[in-house]
Image (cartoon, rainbow, N blue to C red; front, side, top):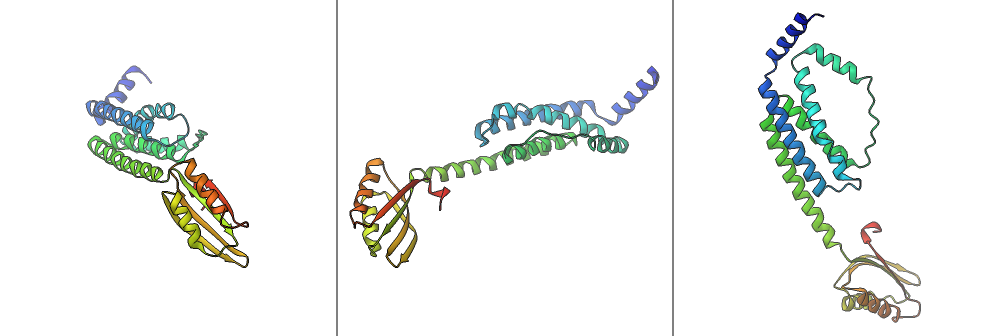
Length: 227
């Protein structure tokens, strides 16, 4: 291939691709991917190094923009890309499903901007981030409400559950009966409680044990992992 053929190929490609729009799409994709990276670093829940993982967002988005811009102007290039990707294997391990979600978002940014829809990509990204922020706040609030919650299991030969309810009410800030089993030799009751501190837990435990000699109590933190 001589210089004239290369020049003709380049000119035919530039005629089908608006360079100014292409550069604008690259800038939009970069800005959106950086915004997404900051959001993921600040509000993500993955255990891995989020800042290091988020540093890949911009290169991935720009690469996707480049690929989509090139192949959308030629069916032959599209088929060639499919053939090339069929022999490429990606072995990067995704340790958290959240990482995969954000990778799809980054690829979506590249697809939209590469297809000349930068405004649509911007609206979609900010709307999705707003919804993710609301979901993050709801989850944070639910986690806060579960703070200091306890799993209390009482086994006793005493069959009057009201005694244990009153004892817990006198020492706990919140109680909720989750399960009550009546057995031949007594009862087995499970409560979800919230205590103000260790002193309240100790007092409640001593008061429950003093109901009868055969009364036992078990108190465990994090009830959502058990019940």
